Image 1: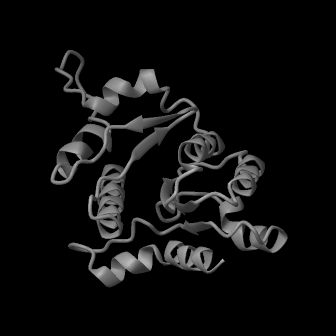
Image 2: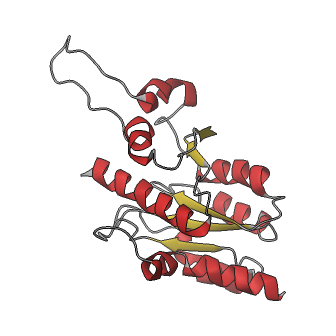
Length: 201
């Protein structure tokens, strides 16, 4: 079931990229202790990309069975994946990469753990408040314990300049078939509102 949720997340993000940009080729990053850029999802190649990069190949039950590793499995050690994750470090990398963009950037940031990172993530949000980045944090339903992401309204009360972040904890709710324009827009509504308000200012 976990693999299916991960596939849904990638498919949904790719549809939103197509909705926002005619080119529809989003930058994709993966993070553990560090953050690494993955090959782009080229138009028409979503399913092969998912097979290569979105999920790990299944472990073999019997010793000696041939292992058909995908690109993600072959990159685990080189990317330092699945040892320790740092949301704050990844935010720092993405801020450095896109912080000077002339266009607003929507960052769909999938989060699986926030243990011990509340203060560091809050500091990253404060540092990136004036940047053209919108942090749309996403998680699978009921998988992420209570964290600073659940307190973004409190953060905005203390620091009104931090208007470029939103948290959606039900990203994997099933939406059958393709996303129509209304559904696509509703999923990025906080980002669209932020863009409008930024242009007014």
